Length: 131
Image (cartoon, rainbow, N blue to C red):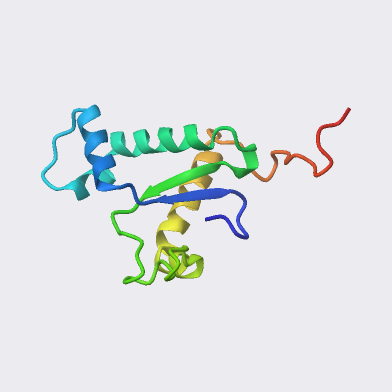
């Protein structure tokens, strides 16, 4: 998520086998898999994995905040098209509160001085690096 926003956020629906694997790796006991979606250690592990996958992207294309969603993205619930593309507007509508919370959390950290202002970070020019 990031259209008309100062930076990108990430809404992730990890697979259940991935959540089980993370819980086993971190030695986390749980009764229902949904408990893992709010576990801080699991969230940090998924965030670290996503950061590794996006680490080679330019800074302005990397996410700053992330939310783990237990909700599947499917055609039946209206979050995917019949060709399995994400319906961005529907996702943004349905997860509006979560998206706003991600931006608010980042803003709070930035106000405390623990995050740089992403609007002040220089994006690479279209012409490439200066010679």
